[in-house]
Image 1 (cartoon, rainbow, N blue to C red):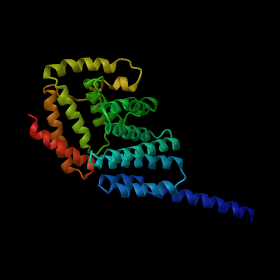
Image 2: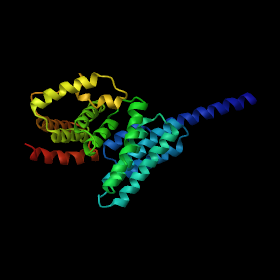
Image 3: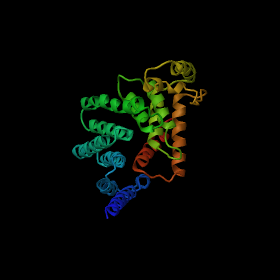
Image 4: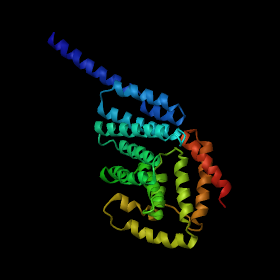
Length: 291
């Protein structure tokens, strides 16, 4: 009888684990997000799944996805609705912090925490925005330097945005970070915002053909030299042998080529996510405006 109880207990544990693992298909949820399923519906599904599982790693996986959806939901509100946006971004940051409590190694929680606090700062004054730079860079550094994750596009894009927008940062390094962001987008996925960001930074930098040739040689030396951190090294990624750059054209010519390529890829892809749709509108404007 005692052995029977033990076997039953083991069976119940196995059943519980099995139900937890099958409670939700997270990859399918990612797919539904890409197909434009309403954020409220997606968030509700994930909240239910979070309550159904006791597995801490699985909870952490669910949390960063909830954080991502909260940020996207806040982005979708009218920019005049600052309070509504703040509520979503605060919720998104909280989800990410909860995810890190469940699993400190789940780097995507760092990423979406930084994304939400960055958006939160944008709803305030220029001083509010400046105050978010340090915690954002701390989150990104945790991913790239502390955990050594280099093949994840989002933190590189965040670095590119910070270095592009912050007056004390370098536009040249912003280009390298944006190139790294584009190089690490998962195979088969089209992210128009990443193309758009790189094009905008190149347009602002505006190197001529001669400047591209000369400066890229210097960046190659810098990339190959010793660096204390991955971020310091990849600030010169444009000089990496992995990067193929056409030195027969200017920065601005490459910027327009990138937008043309992005639009073509988008038309072939089956991804109508809100972020892509919004980026496409801006791409169309630039293509009609840029010479």
